[in-house]
Length: 443
Ligand SMILES: Cc1ncc(COP(=O)(O)O)c(C=O)c1O
Image (tube, rainbow, N blue to C red; front, top):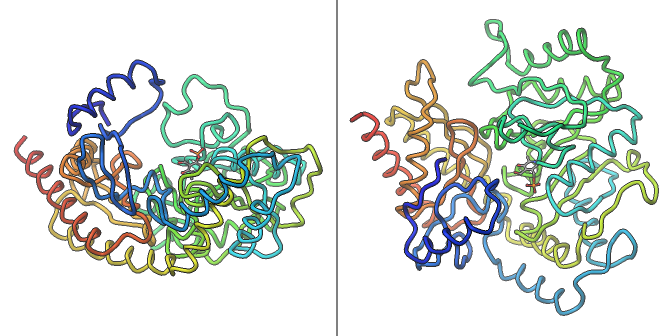
């Protein structure tokens, strides 16, 4: 997106001017939103403008902004103690959170490591995979986003600007993600694109580049997030699991964006009918308090004291927030709500797709929904400016959306967004789309 002050009021514009003088220019910034306060699925800017939130702080606020149960848990913990260092001491909040994560994990007999963020979760998974297998090569995916520290950045292949000028350290062979809408590999008539990607891995990568027995792990998003909200072709994960079993390669699911109920199951990989060896989590788990980590099969967590750790990882306030978030999701049936609201939005978008020339594909699971914009549904030429115009107009008319991929928009509201806000948000979205299409046709 291009930098613009459009949509901000006078207070917002003044704050953005100050921001530009003191904060790093590396932040991308989608549009001129300067937040004052938020509640549930609604948000107000510093000029008092009201917005419906269809992006949840980049798929983080799964129970909405400031859910009362989470606010209470954070306040209670702040009144007890804030920090002691989990690497050196013990406290109940970390234990209770880890037990809860074990209970909802997509595999049995696990242990949990707690960190502060998504990228640290990924670093932990990379290190554990190297430690456990004694191998140092990995498989990653074109279009993937796994974070920005040098280990995770070695896997990130979403936008070249994220890697340019940095010397990444981990040996990663990137292969195409099984995106059937835009296949980059040849597909035989009737062939599942997941099979085509697996055959590429087996017949090309393992034949020309790497011995499979040198590979420590495959790091993969069960729905590719920043890359465009791409749902993998059906045969991909079952066959990938088989390959991992065959060669002793660890299957590492990056559920940082797709986990914690977002797709209508606790974990997106549960839709694929396979179990991972390691799960990376962050974002939605802490309701905005910084926390992340990994869940791994117990027999894989072979590292001993000192092999990995951190000062703040599993911080007691963040852990209390995370435990309250997970309990709230369970108590209020929010995973099922995500599935039902997601289906409702997908149906509404499919209807829009039928009479809007620019919607090429609507895809997703639960409330992890991607809409891809094209100039022509046959050629699938990407409509990047139109996508940007929809987001900007939506913002200026009261709906928060963010992009993904080159030409897609993601819809990731809080999982418990009320129906009236869903309806109001979809109305703003369609009006923004109609306006953008009219402007584009008039060009
Ligand atoms: C799938 C995935 N992995 C890793 C990350 C990195 O998380 P963080 O920004 O907390 O480091 C992200 C962030 O968008 C993500 O979507």
